[in-house]
Image (cartoon, each protein chain N blue to C red):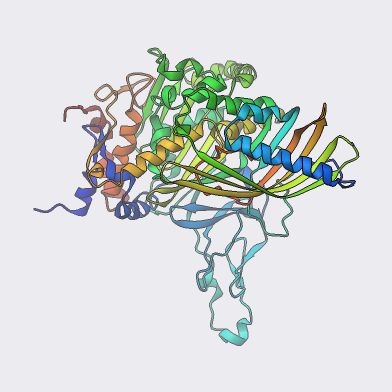
Length: 182
Length: 453
């Protein structure tokens, strides 16, 4: 199967301090919104044509060039458009998601932010790393660590997430579910 | 007189009363025995042929606590080896999947062909002085490997029945979707995660628990608006005749919800899936008759004993791999019909990961229950108490239209009882011969049940 790269956008250089600072603040605000489970506001930070992607990975030898990071037809943890994300999140709003009550405690740490310009002056390629900690009841505890590559687009002056690829640094999730967003 | 260990094992399950001791879900000694008597004797799912189409294609997986390599051979046959170097016992292949002419051990460099032969030993002449018999150091091969409509299973016990006999009455149901549908493909690689639950807890849930759907999955039913949505919040029960429960001699069991082909897939998939299912049903009806063909366009939840579960229609295919008494690795594939257009296959694959994948909005509620049921079995007092699987007890019967033993209504625990009846015979026997002797009267065993025993 021929694959096209998930990100077609090319970097045309490093963004200004002003833009970097704006993007960083946006990422931190997004993390706080996720920690506080304000999911409606989170989705409002996205464009209507957003794609949210977290591929599943396999352990293979280095010489094996099987590319899961760009292939949307393989198994993925998340492979959602806006409508599909909303459907997942709607589950939490029913008040009957038993595995979320009592609530999970979340904390997202966002680091290693890099912002690059693209040919489209309204769009930025943004790299970041995350540590998403979660804890629930007595025994459930996870530290999920990974990298993100995003495309953020300026829409009517506001930065909106248009594309995000999340690479979790585990080929097998060492916990029971992914009730967490990155 | 003290009881023999086999008799003590048999006491863990009371078939007549429809109960099992809670201890079965969290017990070190029992777990060790299960690895020997359940996983050492049963047919275990390894892979689907479509995952290793070409010579040299391989995947690594588990058979109980043993790790194995499953390799496609030049003659298209499939061989399975213990993933262990014959020299000092290191894990030979350290990847999940790939294509290889052979495997080289990272420790001293012993190399094996894809057929398992020991081919290369570094400095063989100089260090072994021609005294190493390489023919006697091939990889340990798992002798019994059979493909059932493309689904590849292996068995470690030379005395076990053939796969077809092992599936028994259950094959009649499997054949409808595995074969008559035109065949099945699994879309992988499987999503993998660990749950802190005993391997039997999800296996028993899939074998026959339609009861939990309306309550456990209230949130998924409300947000997903699948064909099961009317069950949300236990506001409705499937009416009489809406489904079927089936169990069989060797513990395989399933539940049917008639005409619910679109399964757990969300509202946006229902129309296209039902159209696909109905069109194929029309063809199958002529060949299989109305009753059997109807099962194709229905939703089937089932478990092939001991740890291989599926949801037809929903497209979910699972293996629950035991690691520890309360630690189980979950593999999840999407299951599609071979003749579906690629676009539909991709939509189903996406949908499966969204519903029953690791981030699935159906699965997350289940896993919470699975872990809880296993954890609570660690209580000193709790583990001595029994778990109740009495729903429909005394009402199971043989139906001339449906092989196996059938429950009296759409929702019940017939298949739980059938699953644990066979489990009891396996863990309390010293050989397959003894298992078969005990299981000979399996129907009478199950239909004679009374909840006041």
